[in-house]
Amino acid sequence: MYGKKVKLRFLFLSLILIVLILTVYIVLKSLEDNVVYFISPTEIKELGEIDHNKKYRVGGMVKKNSISMNSDQISFIITDFKNEINIKFSGVIPNLFSEEKGVVAEGFLKDRNFLEASKILAKHDENYMPPEVREALKDK
Amino acid sequence: MFEYFNPYRIFKINSNLQKIIFFCFIIVLSIGLLEALFLSPEDYLQKDSVRIMYVHVPSAWISVGIFSLIAILSLSVFLFKNKNLILISKSLAPSGMLFTLIALVTGSIWGKPTWGTWWAWDARITSMLILFILYVLYILTFRIFEDQDKSNKISSIIAIIGAINIPIIKFSVDWWNTLHQPASISLTEKSAIDSSMLIPLIIMTAAFALFSFLIFLMKYNTELIKVKNKGLKRL
Image (cartoon, rainbow over all chains, first blue to last red; front, side, top):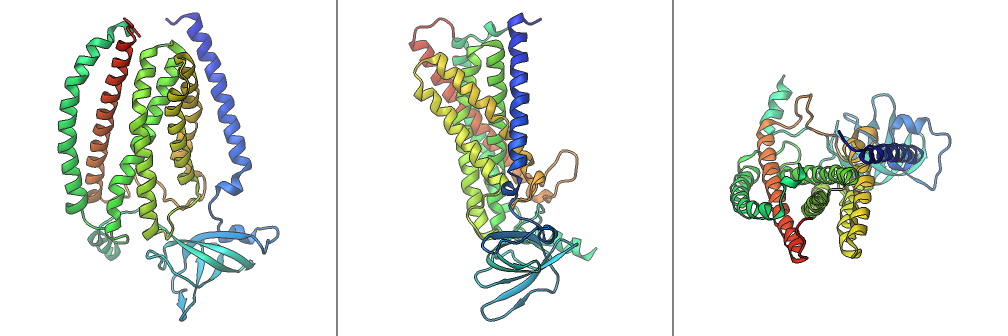
């Protein structure tokens, strides 16, 4: 149906595309540490050694009943339901920060169980609903 | 088959179509804005900032969709050497770029009150920024290279290579940990957005799609006039 030239070009193009996809895959795979925005408490536990001068971002859920606030400091626990990490932070917390919601804390690791955060980001999940629906879901 | 697309016939149809599309766009946009800003409920967690989503998400969809179209057209240009397809993809680019910018800016405005930051170098946001850069490069090649054959070739290469970015944008939230939330809507599963919020989202998407189509028709007609001014009987 198509001419020889078209077929040749198609072959050439498919080859280029395959090579391109492979290249991008390999590049992204090798840069995985940089592509990932945060690591989980479990991954912190599995870290070989801790670099005390490097900022780490830890993400997970804020554990229920773990938030305690002083006059200028807030401490809470981030959990991925396997491992936990204690966070201490003084500064402005985002509006959406609350128990059992996603959070990302950025700061220096003191040890594998303790991070002194310099920035707290709230993570929003994919659910959107009006308050009434939320109430109805809660009652169930 | 391609001879059917006579530039002068298309020009006429285009001009009439523009008026109809403009009319539809105004109506759909008014309904969409009314739904999004007043009739739809606020979110249980984000309160009123959820309304930013009705601009952000459709813009992001359209910008990614238009780039996919440009990539497919560029592939066909390479295969069939059809110059009309280049005019089409060239005319699609401006609205695609505009919506990428809108998605980035509205995302930033939404990010501040919800996440607590204007910008994060996470995979989804960065890949959207790359998409914007690709759009800029794509549009610029037509300005930089005066030789038409050259600009056609280079722009097609940009679009084809840039197509790799499209699946990365889509799946970045599944492949890596990102600050950006995963997709709420999928073809196979139940939507994570309540239906009262889904309706304005769909209407706004339709409005933005109509707007892109309108800009496309205008730009395409300009391109046809350029062809005519060069005194070419065919493309």
